[in-house]
Amino acid sequence: MRFLVKHLGVADYESTYQAMRDFTQQRDSSTPDEIWILEHPPVFTLGLAGDANNLHSPSSHIPLVQVDRGGEITYHGPGQIVVYLLLDLRRLGIFVKELVSRIEQALIDTLADFGISAERHPGAPGIYIAQGSATPVEYRGAKIAALGLKVSKGCVYHGLALNVSSDLEAFSRIHPCGYEGLKTINMQTLGIKDNIDIISQTLLGHLQKQLISS
Image 1: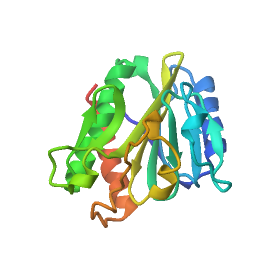
Image 2 (image 1 turned 60 degrees about the vertical axis):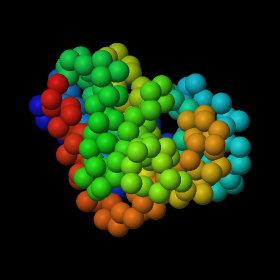
Image 3 (image 1 turned 120 degrees about the horizontal axis):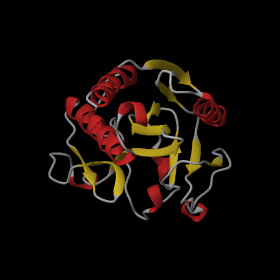
Image 4 (image 1 turned 30 degrees about the vertical axis):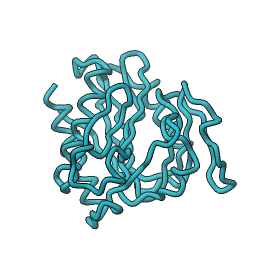
C-alpha cells in the first residue's frame, strides 16, 4: 500500500483546512491516500465539541478557527509538526478507534527514538510524558502531542500534531483539550536538539509502518 506524501512547508491553516475538505468530498474509491506534513502560522482551533471559553486568554495576534474535527481546543504554530492523514478507512480495513491507537503508537515510537518515554491516557486522546520516565518530575504527565480526526463517508481527514520547539506560552492561553491546568511540553524543552525535518521523517516512517500493518 502506498501513500502520496506531500511536504507543504509552512501553510496557512484555513486554506489547508478547506483543501482537506475538498479533497475528501471529491475523492472516490480509486483515489490514493495522502499524508500531508507541514507547519502552521500561529492559530487556535476549536473542535466540534469545543467550548470557546477554554481560550481563557485570547491574543490579538492568534486567530481562533472553528473546525469540524473531534476534540476540543488546541494551538498550532511554528516548531510543531502537523501531519494530516487523508485516508480511506474502508480500503484500509480499520475503524476510527483502531486508527487512533495506531497514530498514538507511531507517536510513542517516534519519541522513544529520541529518548523520550511517552504514554497514552485513557479517555484523553493524545500522547503524554510517561509518569515513570526519567524526565524531571515537573514535566511528567505533560502533553506533547495531540490528535483530532473527522470521518466523512468512510474517509478520514485531519490528523496529529507533535510539539518539537513550539511556543509553550501560546498553550498557556488555553485549557488544552478542555482540561484546565493540563501542562504542555515540547521536545526542545526535554533536551532534544535534532532538526525538525529529521523528526518529521522519523514520525512519517512510524506512521507508514502502522498504517501498512493493516
